[in-house]
Image 1 (tube, rainbow, N blue to C red):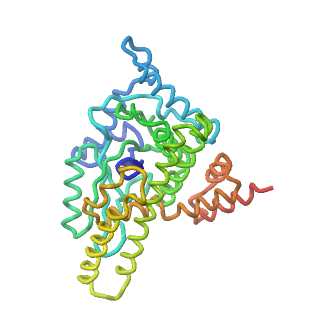
Image 2 (image 1 turned 180 degrees about the horizontal axis):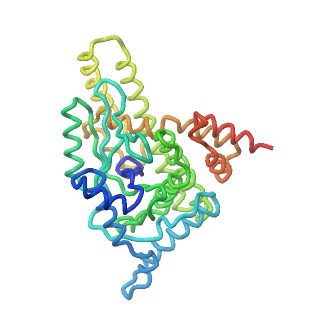
Image 3 (image 1 turned 30 degrees about the vertical axis):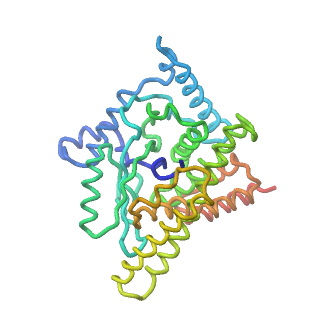
Length: 361
């Protein structure tokens, strides 16, 4: 299932160094960054080389397949796609849950104005991550008291943008090849291309390249007629159908939010529109989707914070796809063009288009 239970995000801005983190602890023992950083450093301290999984006496075939898959995807991402070579995903951490962290997002109740947090290095960020879900709930409660819509979701990976070697986690053992490829390529994009204060573009780009890269990987390694490709095609089709449905809903709500009617009427119409959409979704499910992965939409309490996530990840996806296809569908060249984007030169989408134009013969 490719939804925000499995989406890949930055967890939090990592401190510039361990020394800074330790020094900062002397004056700010209870602060957010220190607490999350300390837990992260604990994970990194427990990380073992990936190869150690295959060197133990009780190694299983599953361990061997997992290690070989990860190593092959990393080689593919660097050698065939041109992403930066790092030490990311060369180590492994055992963890006793099926997700890495809980992410909090928030939005205004009567508009899609997202709440942002500001941190050093990365700038403004439209989400905040916690390794302890209780801490995420406390943050959410604070935002709700301020009158915001709030959403908490689990994530299974994030990027530290090259500051540390991002590890793999034990819950990833059973991931399908296409899901693993999408995750690793997505995160390696973050470690290769990052535009400060432009998370919208950063996430859209990583989402697009992760998805296209996974498709290319499966095609080259397994073939177009393989069960792996069939699984990916159905998964992508379901994701596209879900995104399209969400975009229709957000467009309908956005029209209400931008209207001149009183705020209370906007909130009333919001609830009616969402309820109608959930009912319609349930009624039309069988004709829209191949799997049961998205049925939960009709049961969860949808709000602006949830819907805004799709605006964050997919608003520019259509334009990226257009540019990719116009450039000949060469993902290596597309990534090379994206690497030239400079924050100081303005709109990254315009820069990407210009760089791709320069590549044409």
